[in-house]
Image (tube, rainbow, N blue to C red; front, side, top):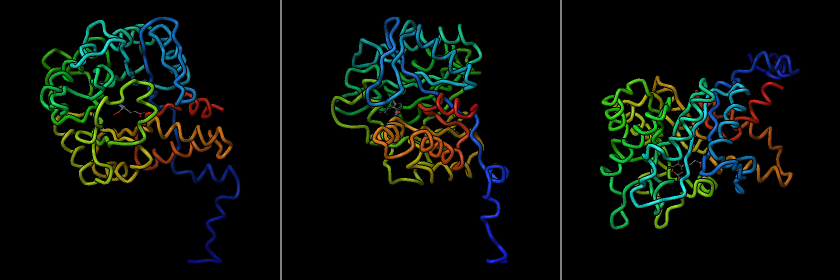
Length: 324
Ligand code: PBG
């Protein structure tokens, strides 16, 4: 049957009809809020390149997490930013490190919030790379050992899920092994499996002070043109023991997300990263787009493509709009 008997517009005539035929709905349960934690107390410092995003000290972070939970958001992912940095990222796995203290406090005060930790070295190393460096090269296996120790220290602090974001080969297996050997067989691994060497991480590196002092991350993060390779990375991480997989960034990589949703049967996360978030805010500030609508449209597109979990700096705004 074709026009004029077929008229797709019939089911778009009112908000009631549109809501009856809506195929994808955003839920608060889909959202994970990324949070930055710094030393000190009473700190709530705006990140200039990310409107609405702050760097919190542990006491303020706890308040932020309570508010997040009260909005119905089930989970946060924590990024620790230490004051002291060195070549091996000693702060990353220190029992009293910034991330470890943050996890302990949040799990103590907001126990039903699912706490995910970003496992990486770039926030802790003085050179800003995600691993151990020798002659300007990031060495894989020594980095994996440090990342495994870091994940274990996060589990000891009470993390529910650890999320390695470094892109070293073999880190998921090493983390699974060290967690199991130490009685943390119930701590899950969300692998940043298909993480691309992206220009969209710019504002995050301001927030996390993790811009590489030399070179870039293209020798470990993925090359943006590669789709098949992304599926291979994801398959490898599943074989190594990942419980959930991530694609990052989100909007420029929806093809990979959609392919992964068809291919794998584990929860799939997508990270709507700092640059994606800040672009929407920058355009909205100029009056060029409707910021909240654009943010919602971007987020629902990520869900439609196949994401079960969406990491987004707009999680609180989205949750508020959902209850409105
Ligand atoms: C750490 C890490 C990065 C992001 C998440 N974890 C930065 C990077 O790889 O340079 C980016 C997140 C964002 O841009 O919002 N390795």
